[in-house]
Length: 339
Image (tube, rainbow, N blue to C red; front, top):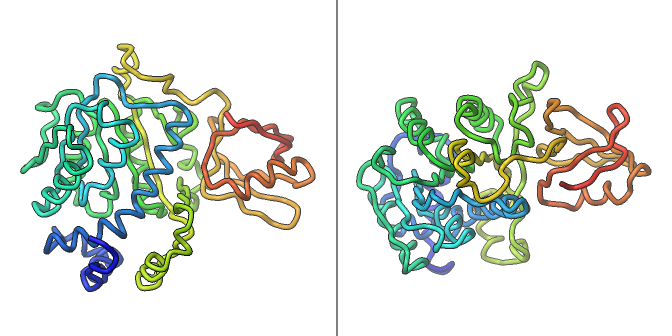
């Protein structure tokens, strides 16, 4: 599939389904061409979100536990999430990639693309939902599934999550989906260490009274040159989307049994005193405002440009979402170090 072969009518239909919510009514793939057109466009943009998450994990040298050598892409769609994860950590880190989707067309398309990309990796197509008790230790990959899950399917998914050794989960960065992901976070903290984006292991500060309007989301930058690529510009105009950045929410978990058994590949817990900016820093004339998440809660702070001009500039240009350790005087940031 290339840009000249795109099925624009199929992309229009898929976009309408995603926007209207009818995508949750059942499988929406009609032909392999649907999936190929989607994989080149919408799925690639999802891949940019995964790239941002995986870069953040790499910056803290986190990898899936050594024993979790089975990669399970649940609700795989065209398979972009599983491919991004396997490529980043290396296909040699895994013995098999399991693919499941309620659409047989999606399962077969994802398997074909995975075999092309990883010819030496065992690609397993699951005709029915994988049973966690039948799997060897596994790393679970979830991507853009919450909008399409009825309650009974969510419970099945929670069972799969509960037995996973690690979970990497990326969703759209909307208020509603983020809040749903926070609810799931709270439900699993007894079993999992919170790797990212949470800078602490306590109750989510967004659940505190007064924070109802806020949500946990970030923005992934597109690859360099996308905004000047005529094919992407045409796609963005037709789809009505902003190519400059992509909002997303995410959650990365590691089972505490892996850490206790010494199977964790890195120190999984965020450093003490770490904070992360939610969303983007807002810049005004002479100062910036940030919504900061840390162990003490979620609060708004201000940074005067004259207090730290380099940090002011960094917050404006940095498209990543690093961890900081603030220096503060009350509600004002006076300096910071990245951790």
